[in-house]
Amino acid sequence: MKSNTRKTLDEFIIERQDDFQYSTGELSRLLNSILLAARVVSYKVRKAGLIDIIGAVGTTNVQGEDQQKLDLYAHNIFVETLVNREIVCGIASEENDNFITIQGLDQSHNNKYVVLMDPLDGSSNIDVNVSVGTIFSVYHRISPVGTPVTMEDFLQPGVNQAAAGYILYGTSTMIVYTTGFGVNGFTLNSAIGSFYLSHPDMKCPEDGNVYSVNEGNYVHFPRGIKNYIKYCQEEKENRPYTSRYIGSLVSDCHRNLIRGGVYLYPSTLKTPNGKLRLLYECNPMAFITEQAGGRASDGNRRILELTPTELHQRTPFYCGSKNMIDKIEEFIANEEK
Ligand SMILES: O=P(O)(O)OC[C@H]1O[C@](O)(COP(=O)(O)O)[C@@H](O)[C@@H]1O
Ligand SMILES: [Mg+2]
Ligand SMILES: [Mg+2]
Image 1 (cartoon, rainbow, N blue to C red):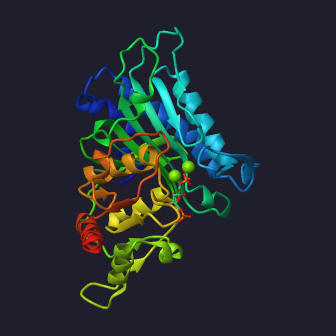
Image 2 (tube, protein in one colour):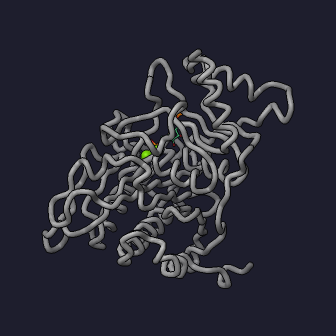
């Protein structure tokens, strides 16, 4: 179907405005701001090899990771865009130790939403031209409007998310998001600068034959996960499964969302809480995956029901096709017997 006969994301947002709780158009404007920033970042990513945006800055973030130029560029573009559009009262980002308080042009602290984000996901793939992404999570504040945003506004369980999504800078630039009424994907026609509905009502197959895990860490994995990986590699039924690991959470989860499959980032002896961050990686990907009929777990509990205690806390993460997550939990439970 030719792009100009498809629905644009702007039209889609207006049409679905009444889905939003507290529907005052603010969440629509917030989503539009994220789209604006995504276009700017996408433009930079697509010519990363030609301009001085590759490589490390020389600083580290609160997780001790070397910050890439594109990490900070994306962080600054999203923060600037959200601040200037007067919609959020606070922002938390992987690239900032603490949350950012946005008081608003009239210093009234009247805005209602907080945004948590991973401005550039898959940083290790930036300078080798492999797909990367941006992940965002939106909550309605719990502190009173008119007062400065608080840490509690960010430390909400994932079930409270008003919206979540990711932008994938891959063969094309896409945005996939949910507001709790299903999952839809839109592709950017960069010649026109509009996102068009390309993946309506996305559904994650209950089963798949792909597993995504960094097997380089195998020796450090818990027994249950080692057993599950052996199970994936067995010559039985529709196995062995295919191993696919891009090393960008957004890209691996996007593939599994469309074709079925499972992404695993287990705890290891070195990192007992795994690597991925609960608030701006796991919660938004879990909300999207569940809304598409998949599942997301820390091996025992539903990710969305975890109660956060720190802004940058990590959690083991298993996400994807429902029956495959059930199987992983089974292997972990058997290990614990
Ligand atoms: O290199 P590893 O340890 O397998 O980790 C890869 C994972 O780490 C991440 O890169 C972490 O995200 P950031 O790039 O945003 O820090 C995920 O995208 C990816 O799935
Ligand atoms: Mg990330
Ligand atoms: Mg990142």
